[in-house]
Length: 345
Image 1 (cartoon, one colour):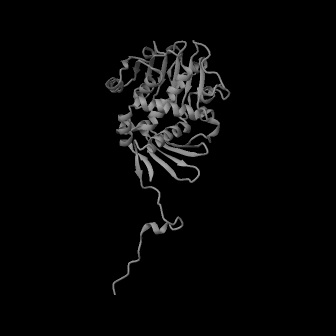
Image 2 (spheres, helix red, strand yellow):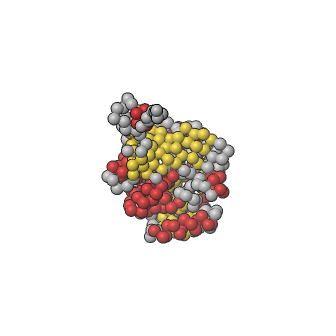
Image 3 (cartoon, one colour):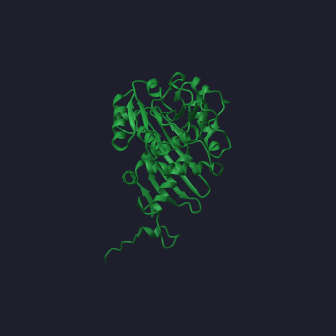
């Protein structure tokens, strides 16, 4: 049987473990895999763009396991009561080609995006960062806040969204399950005024400059996670020039990230290099560090690997009858159990 995690399986697992505990484990898996970065196959995702959004496939392998994710991004969906992002993923054994795990990745993508942001911030933000601004209160907001609380000890969230009801939704969800102090700000500038860390996650397409230099104090770390496709940005170019920019996979980020608006030779550092101490992260307390994150397949690999390990313990997940198991592997037809109907004499 292939292991399977559906949306209710994920919800049940998170209720039992808590989002914070799962996020800390996922941070550990992401760090471990980023430190193995050279072992992985790496390529920009295969994207099919339309006026409404994008559908993408994101594959990678470390030579032992293979993973891929199907994911969409459709900002117009919320007007019809649908999610902006949905996904599903497969984790497979390279030696046999057999899938080991099939999972929903709508919830899991939100968790891995937040965990990746927290991994980057732990490596790049000032050590005593405790106050965070969240710009954008959509589906990602609560996951970001809880991952940062678990991984960095964030205690205070300043939240801004032009849709006040979205901000109130996020605040209500967070205060119901965590000790975080969550305040709703009236503007981007007000949310960022006292922030050690800023996470910006907007969904509207187009070249935007939501976050500008005047919003950011010296020493701030910025997670820019909403600019994730060609033609979509969140940060002003002047802010990128003022900061030190870190990315996942440079060829993909130059096409999809905020640095798409910069010249091709604009300098960036890949996060794995910081995590393996091959490159410097924050060098001075007053540095502005920017993680221009578009999401990369190795992060999905880490998330699916964690689920596979959890499923192996029998704590969660269930079997999925996906692969036939014939007694004779050359007799696939025989697994159908078909018999010739003989007419009665």
